[in-house]
Image 1 (tube, protein in one colour):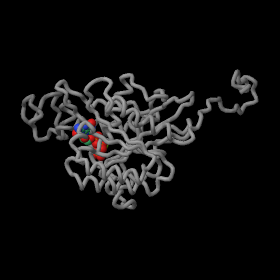
Image 2 (spheres, protein in one colour):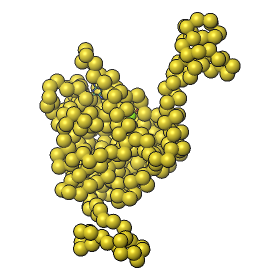
Image 3 (cartoon, protein in one colour):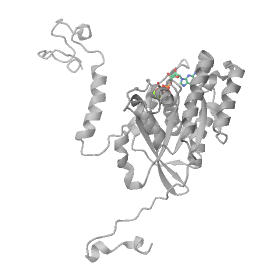
Length: 327
Ligand SMILES: Nc1nc2c(ncn2[C@@H]2O[C@H](COP(=O)(O)OP(=O)(O)OP(=O)(O)O)[C@@H](O)[C@H]2O)c(=O)[nH]1
Ligand SMILES: [Mg+2]
């Protein structure tokens, strides 16, 4: 560990020993890099991706990696939209945690994932401590080209669907709401353009803390979403609803009225990551219901056809198609 965290090129001290200080207290050395192993791990996982002979690492996907799923048909993309800190990433961490613990998205059975490591990483950071406090995932990076796509294969009425949840930082969504052509909000634009349906987050805590300012931000973002929405479904999620009682009712009513005007058919759910009991409506029921409702509304799911490719050889052995031949 010491080796990897030492920035001095000619230091050849053994593991867990500092040559500069002549002691095992290497973290006190000026050449010691506190988070080097984490940084290195991050970089390595992406580096490995490019040199690996296996085309994926289990990490979340980037937009140019979607073709990994192309052999199974066009994946359905669910865009998560909401301002900074609205609870988007935590929603994904909780969704996976619930599925992992045996909860179901009704009618949509879990059938695998290409991004298990990505899901696991978020779920691990969403940590409920013994004192009941919750540790949350880190804020999502706000670089214009950063986004993370989390994959779920879901089986519905005997059809397999590839679903990608597209997460980006709320900061880029605020920029996008101001100006859709803002070059520093490219990833928000991509999510908006490509998604087949949306989860729109309304942050109860922001409404409590910032009142009118939060309302303006939520409505401005919603208006921008409405502009090119067409028939794509949207589900409204009032996040951090464990705090909902502390919101001022006049602000809530005013936001509700604006959202009703913009999205008259959208269902609205209160969600939270705090649960008092199992099954808790805000946590165990509504987190899953949000995704379930969106999946049910997303248009024309394409059935998956699993059949062998047409043999090109004239050899009888290769032409033999067994039971598939008659279908
Ligand atoms: N009270 C309460 N706080 C929550 C809940 N979920 C998340 N939070 C808080 O909200 C913070 C932000 O959550 P994130 O999931 O990172 O929000 P985000 O929308 O992904 O944020 P960006 O990536 O920065 O856009 C967390 O660090 C928690 O402090 C919840 O259910 N209840
Ligand atoms: Mg985030």
